[in-house]
Image 1 (cartoon, helix red, strand yellow):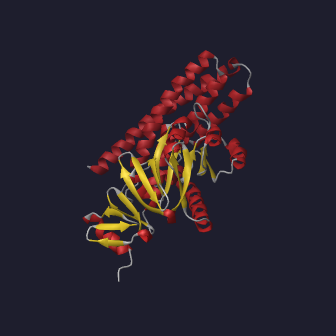
Image 2 (cartoon, chains in turn blue, yellow; image 1 turned 135 degrees about the vertical axis):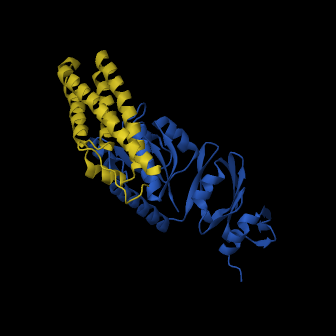
Image 3 (spheres, one colour; image 1 turned 30 degrees about the horizontal axis):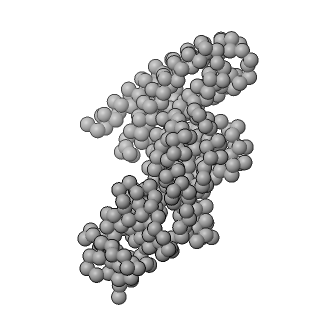
Length: 228
Length: 133
């Protein structure tokens, strides 16, 4: 699974430079590039990312002030041309500190550090995600999610207990979820493979819910479940 | 990515070893970043002049802080360090007039550097166009 990230950087060439490195690595997807902290906070209020590449000196809020306002804690790699911020970086427990301009190898070291922490966290914690519902962040364990359904600009999460509607896109969720446990079965549906009760022709059933399986996705669904 | 067999040689005033490390012979990317950096240096240079004329030291420091890494992206680490020293001077002095001589020097150096960067960009574009055709 790729690391999802945003770039918060007011200097366009620096943002472009970073974006190129992310593409080159094949390890990081950039969900958004924001020229200031306010835009980043707006983006982060409706989207979850694993990592923020964060500049410090920007118009309006600086990088550290932005971190103070975050409602959840993704990993942070500071990108600044001022080494004096290293102390603050330590105080804010950021994952790494890249002094601009940095080389590709140095960038890769930082990303690998992030990747390692993500893996360690996944091993020690039950996998879960936070979604924003009615202004608050709600924790959903992966095992409790039955399926996700696209509703235009929104996505419905159906769990064993409840249904939640949150602002997000299937494309985003596909990147986040599709792997071993979850699978896209239709352009509007991602399902938890372990929750499937039965499959008949082009329809699958999960706790009484009827979910269409598109022709283009059927082969990959059948490949992922244990068919005798 | 460019053909690894065909290497672009940066002109003598650029830190070629550092640029090779940054761009790994990907001259398409180097061209994009050079172009974007040149545009931003020119913009920030105008802002710097305006800030100096208005006597706002902190705003002047911020402009040079922002401009600084751009010289790294184009393989001019000595200029990066020169701008860094000027940025520090902006924090050290009490009145902007104390900086007038240094300010005039750095504006002149950056102006000359922009000409040099535009020439290098032209060379890079010619290289990339020749490679494509």
